Image (cartoon, rainbow, N blue to C red; front, side, top):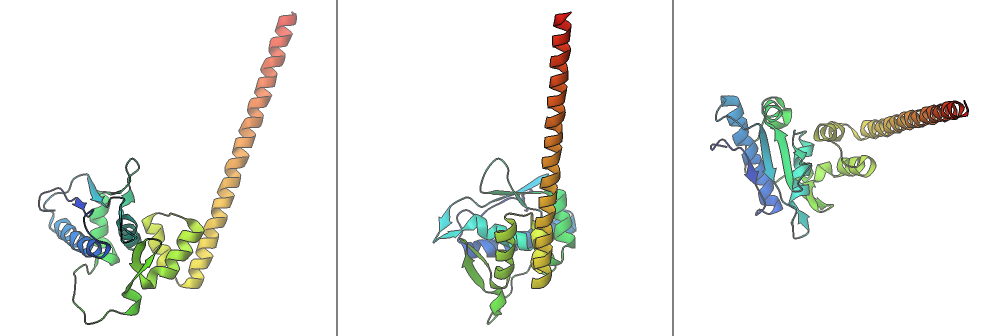
Length: 205
């Protein structure tokens, strides 16, 4: 961050070490955002790689953590193993998000069970997040971080209703798109028939 790059490369770290490094990195970027220096580039890149260590995917682990926090990081569209965030969105998130109010690492004699880590689907996630993680990923698949964070924070009963409403909304949207395609196809067929009839009539004359 001090070199005005703001990027990070966690490919050589284990899952646990990467989560610690992620917290420190976010903390440093938060300080820079609040102080206004050093300036950030237009986009901030986090390199996670695609490798697995001891059956743990670093990419999936970091994504699960950032998704839970509702961060602006998104997978790169052209290269796997990269997470990218627009600098303006990242600075605003670091300043205003309740998830970023306390990014300092602290020693504790013991952790609450809900904060302990559990291996699921090849990534480490907070044990208290497991039920929500399963609900969201199994029923909706991959969703954007802000949406994931919003759903994860809901009570179980409200999350179930929200997910069901989302699924129904997707179905309605799909049906509308399907009808539009069918209507467009019908119009094109009618237009083609008219052209054929007009051409045939002209040729007879």
